[in-house]
Amino acid sequence: MSGSQEQSSKGETQAEKSRKSQEKRMRMRNLLALTNPSIVDINVPEAIRKVSPQLLDKGEALRVKARTVSEESSKLGGSSEQTAREYVATRAEFAKETSQYCREVRTLVNQLDSSQQIDKTSAKRMRDETEDIESTVSKERALAATNRAKLTFGTLHHATHHKLGEAYLAAIVDNLKVPPHAGIELFPRSGSDNSAFKERVLEAYKVPNPPVETGWCPISRDWVRSAYLRAGHIVPYAVGELNASYIFGAPPEEGWKIIWDTTNGMQMEATVEKAFDEARFVVVPCCDDEEGDLKMVVLDDSILGKRTGSDLSYEELNERPIEFRTSARPSLRFLFLHCLMAVFRRRRFAVPGWERDCEKVIKGRVWFMSGDWLRRGVLQALAHEVGDIGSLSGEYEEVASEQNGVRDDLPGQRDSQHDERVAVGIRGAWETHIDREEWVSLREELIEEDIMG
Image (cartoon, rainbow, N blue to C red; front, side, top):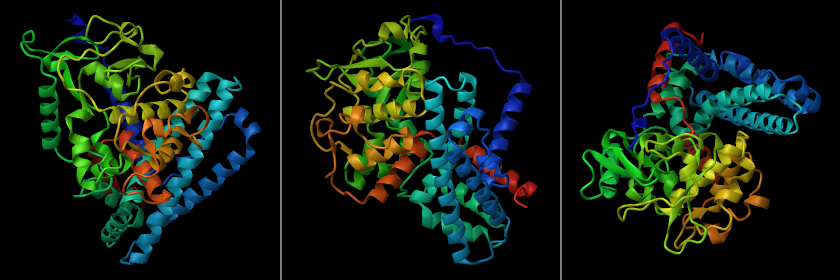
């Protein structure tokens, strides 16, 4: 066990932290309140202006629509259900169009970056700007997709004494308090579920007679101090029970088991868990596997020289079998979805090396064992929503094959619109970056300062 676990970093000054916090909250104000049409006011480099005047026209149209929505936000809500319904529908449509616009901008930026028509600094800035917009808009889309009625009546409830935009924001915050049987859970339901899950996972991976106050990390292949051990979720709990049961073709009542079963977790050292969540590496079956062996495959080459909590670097662990010391194993279908989400996300942001991801982690591997695995319609919607992939063909054809357990005929199949709503919800949960406390605090600030008029 290495002393590298005694982590240290250069701390930011209080002024820098304060400035970053202020900037983040200002972005939240603009994006959520829509009082500022800069939500789509992206500074497009000259190279893109020359290549795609159509995209500039679409951006201008969105700016006009943003001003219209902002004007609607400042109106008194009154007590009309129709007014609230129309406003929520307008916001949902605007959020969808904004997300599509960001997708088109990002695709063009990636093309120009790969052909060296724009410099790396401009490309990175453009990607960061679109991600700032889209990551927040995705929360609106997730709630509108899965809880439209609750969002509408919540807006109506708050609109009696407040303006529409203020009432809408209050309704969003209310809906982030997870109701029973919610179709999408953007934040943890309760501390008890998390605590019980951690206890079960750590117990399942507990090796008899370990060194004092340590546990085994199968990925870093070393003993780790107990304080640094984590029970990492594979499919995040925020995906929600109904969404999880639907994408995997299970009855709704089994959603809880999918999210909180020990097979949806792995014991990991803290820095390893963080890298896993950030899609820097994935866990996949060994190609010549006959006994269910798994191995770690690094996707982000920038971490190869870094060390985990053990004395081994990611380069030394890359492509090596994971070393389990108990009978506990993660589920292949959960690892498969995690792997696909990693591939899709890296493709969307043109992370260096994404072109080789499918070859590394999908092709030639035996993922599918038996039973119902993954719903094709939701996978297609996720590929489009998360990875900017129009169709699962070409290099992604093997991903969507029945050999990998991806099927059209899983129990409970609904229409493509439902598949899209589930995909939007899953993405909103998987990529959430703003915690609920910030949203609640922001709502109080908006009301107190009367930001919306």
